[in-house]
Image 1 (cartoon, helix red, strand yellow):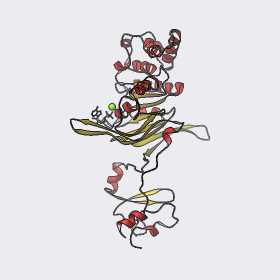
Image 2: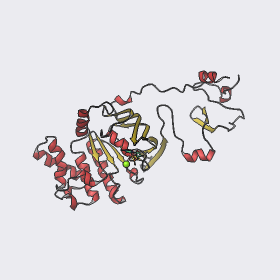
Image 3: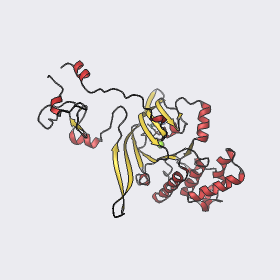
Image 4: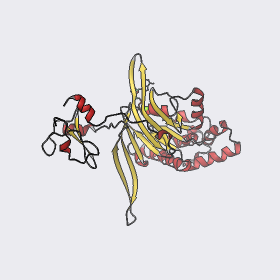
Length: 339
Ligand code: ADP
Ligand code: MG
């Protein structure tokens, strides 16, 4: 059999048709093969290497990954602070690649809230907590009495009602970050992005900041994406996505189950990301355990796909090729090779 026959006969490894999910009403953040390349003195760094991501409206998601994996790059693009090199990215229907400078400014003011790791970047030190939270409302034209009331409510929601009249230096780091969440949600943004907001805090304080993020999510319905490298902290969210080399590699979904006796249990399941072109990343431990490299044998079974080392003799003893989806025959009848 010639290579042309193989190409004509076998599975179609084609690119998928355009995905229309970016416009779906329940989708807030949508990235399709997003690429960001930085060039410094002629050297290219591919910070995002074709990243796919869909986040629904109102989700609270943690983003984890090693230093340099592209987390901040992704957040800055989603915030409209940086422009992608290629691919597609939309947030609340705004196309982040084609936006004009004016749209970008409007977007930054009205659609997203941002929380930085450095507390000093989030708050003005010569104002009280309440004044900090009220300031964005003032800039948006909210009346004085209304802003006072809303700022007080926000501080209470975030568990820092007692900091109302405190100046920034009088508050602890955790309190400052909770007030900063109040600033970020002051004008009811659709999306709140937080880049390692607990990076400078101890575990206990970080948990309090996460509780405040959960409260903000529940109260305002804002979609929240929070970068953290604290694995314990990601237990506070239903969905944790892991980024590796500028792509989403795995995700963990958590849910609460209640059995017949009414007892609650928390279930966490890990998934590998599968992109729209059909690519997935196998964990390096799996590859090493079976000595897989360069190429593998794929097989389609009724309810799963097999991945075998290229030199493995499959069950049945015969060479096995790609099995064809939908065909009712056994795998051995569908080998690649002379017929
Ligand atoms: P993370 O936030 O996960 O630590 P970053 O998104 O900051 O990672 O960085 C991803 C990669 O892109 C790194 O290799 C980093 O050096 C590079 N990078 C990020 N920002 C820039 C920039 N402004 N100029 C050049 N390279 C950058
Ligand atoms: Mg970073």
